[in-house]
Picture 1: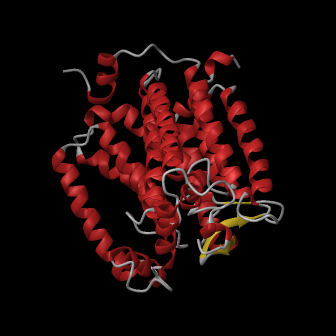
Picture 2: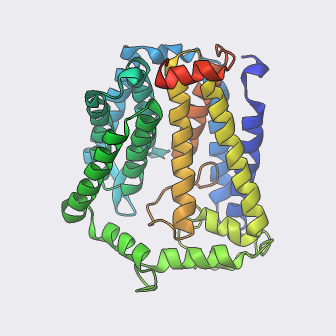
Length: 371
């Protein structure tokens, strides 16, 4: 591995986020082990990042590799029906005793790979609705397998990653309108037959958060208080009352942004968003320099993945979106999602070894075809 193959701007933006997550977890209470456990996963994930960066990942361009990855992810998701460990009402974890992981996270990698493979040969023909339907089947299989457990947050991410990659590939406005209409009808059907009652309660609480702040609206209400109480410069590390006194639920995972905002304030949030902006920028730069359509579309898919995770998590913390249980990249507690993030970026770094210089006309032609 050559050091110039690593995007040090990207890694330089990630390290402060990891440190901020660890510091915020450590400040919650004196006797918790969140920070210690997360530090282990940080080391493992960084090792995976550099390890994957050394591999020639061009094999992912092949149909065999992308289909195999898709098949393995489908089998792992299917195994949850028998082996799934129930946590917070969802059987979305495989528990092996010494560690457990969430197959839906690795399914997101598989989805980005197979969609990049599919669109890399057909993106110029994306106006043909058949390609939207075929690519939608890949996403729909994962979406259903994840939703039934039920894990609405991960299912939503899968849906949005597919939608984002479809739009990047050049879907027509007519087909986009049809997709929105189909999505609206699908939501109505999900509301009637698919969503659990507690998931419906989250949507109701989003629409009217003050209707019952002691039950269904409690999470959103407390996170809003935590974000607002941070003020300009925050209460200081270890002085966030909402998290320290445990008024804020899931303060180490779903609501770590609210815990961070309470302690670091508006200034800290601006720095946080700036670091996320640098990460997205560097991912897009790497994507634009992809050696083939596959690398360009894979990088675009990775950018969509992070944008969706960041947007949904911060949105639900500020009560702009319903609570869906989506982690905040690099800050939220948990090993599986952190490892997934670094695996995606490791593949991106590997692709930089055989990248081409960026040229705006060439990049435009890769996405929309020559004029």
